[in-house]
Length: 115
Length: 112
Image 1 (cartoon, each protein chain N blue to C red):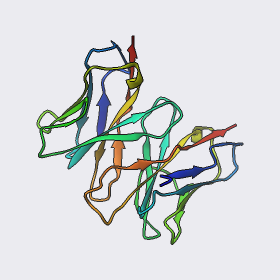
Image 2 (image 1 turned 90 degrees about the vertical axis):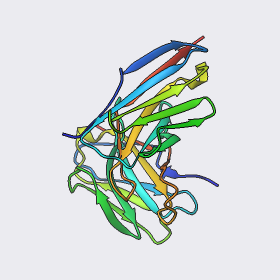
Image 3 (image 1 turned 45 degrees about the vertical axis):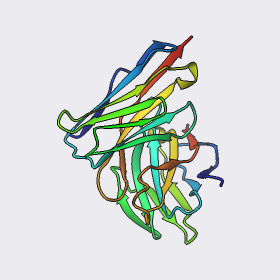
Image 4 (image 1 turned 90 degrees about the horizontal axis):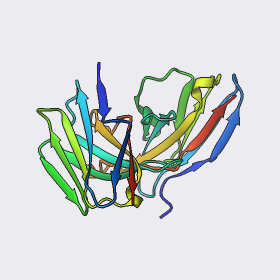
């Protein structure tokens, strides 16, 4: 079992550009959540996808958008990048159908640097 | 406002001692609370979950307590080892959809 995988590992962009980050959930998991973790801070919830729809959203602007595919993989898109978007972006998955599994399985993250 | 606080940014203890980390929250009524470990440059790894009707949970050298009256959870690592050095995060659920709210984390350093 590969666990949660994310790509790319690192990314450098300039202000104003757009970026797409990708995530493949753990096998058997149908729900994907995205988190932003600034240096020295805890992860902050961006949004969650289930059945190809955004189910919940945190306090992030519309520049942050996402998508979930039928195979449960997901993308996070950020438009008009700002310096403050520099962070570690984490993807987490869990099997919504089995409510006994409340813990989140996190991927290794994508380190985004905006110059 | 809603807030989750974890004690001191860093905790330094000697190998073999018990490390105690604190998580305090306000304005939440979580159904459960989770603890994660995070190593530098990596994603958090789940350690323990404790539900609102549970007072204590144990797993090997780890113990978590949950006091919903005090709105506090304590996380203990007994017989600590240098390999336990990492950042430890507490997280609360805020509904039925597994959205987690994380604290800022406590960096634990265990020295020989």
